[in-house]
Image: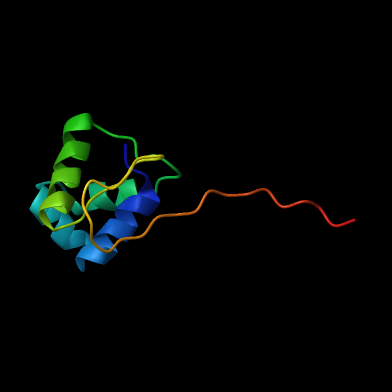
Length: 89
């Protein structure tokens, strides 16, 4: 699935605002706002999530899942795994 951080980053890469994404996905602006305000994985109606993912895909953004290789070349971003830091001392 998609995380809220991925959704915000994908929208930024596509150069669109929340309103535009809502219009392209055929969902309400408050729905997009709620999805992006989530902690971690976005939860919601599967059909709504699929519409948003499809709209991002049509905007030229490839969403890459955890431990998944990118299917195509091109620019993109990926978060590094979080490495716990040792406490000093």
